[in-house]
Length: 201
Image 1 (cartoon, rainbow, N blue to C red):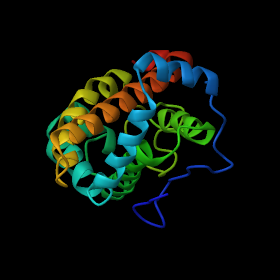
Image 2 (image 1 turned 180 degrees about the vertical axis):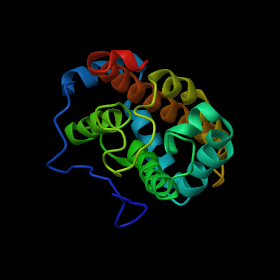
Image 3 (image 1 turned 60 degrees about the vertical axis):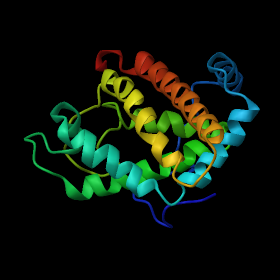
Image 4 (image 1 turned 30 degrees about the horizontal axis):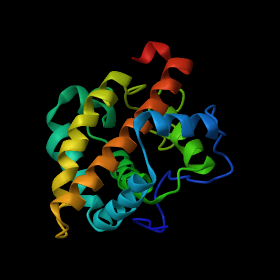
């Protein structure tokens, strides 16, 4: 499995400390059917991972530095309560964000992946936000902000998928697979928010 670095602060994919997801593998398979995620999508998502493999830093900088940083109600989630920058926190979370791009594309969607989806969601809620990095920032990221940002991520990823000379048809299939995956992931996160932190909409 490709990683952006041998050591990624706070990255715990497959670690024993990660709790088992409250969503079963059978339910995940049903969700994949609902979103239309097929074997062809799996193939093109892997291709997307190969294409994005050396571009994850640029992708995340695009999202974080060029978009989120200019939107105060989004940027505040990686800053202190009084709005001061937390550069170490931002750097660490950026690395995890980069690895999430690769995990989205290259990891099998098995129990370990499902468990880590729950862990990522928890780290955006008041149950776990800030704990991994030991910082003081906003207590949670509202679910509405996460859902609302998905179309921005989907739109801005496409030029990176086209950057290696693949045909328009291949780029479209990679992009379609990426969008389906993000819809699947946000559905998993929404379920966790609804069950555990319903007031954090």
